[in-house]
Figure 1: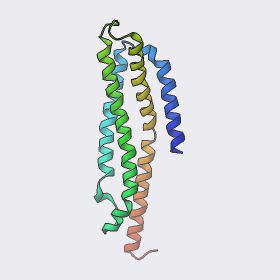
Figure 2 (figure 1 turned 135 degrees about the vertical axis):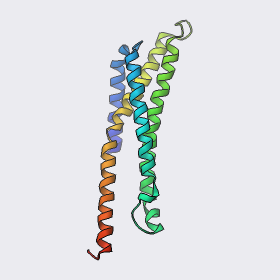
Figure 3 (figure 1 turned 60 degrees about the vertical axis):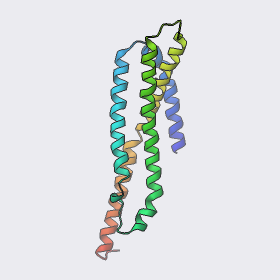
Figure 4 (figure 1 turned 180 degrees about the vertical axis):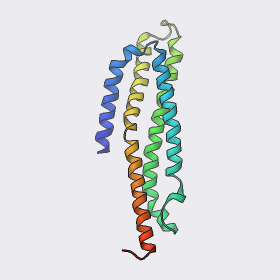
Length: 160
């Protein structure tokens, strides 16, 4: 299911960047929106990664509980780190685009500038689409934590 989701996000990113690229040249509004959105996304994602990696939130009273959950926590954190990297890649390619915009066409052709614009639009749209999975992942995590806490309290009170 994840492979299909990523493939759809890649396709939406490519199609969106293809059609949006002609409107990106010299458009300060797009630069401002992309910079603002991905900076906020990156900050939010850092907070999520910090919460996901907090070992004190792993239910159970012994070290085995933490050890048993390590792989699932690692997998979630790695997914979020890659999402964070796509946010930073969007900002990095956008920065390159802004720098190249002022360079004369004799040094850097319009075609190269167009590909760089396409690049930041593609990575931006792709990572934005990937971000739609984030609330559902957080909901799943919280529901699992609630279920585990309910089971722990039932066990403590002797309820099967």
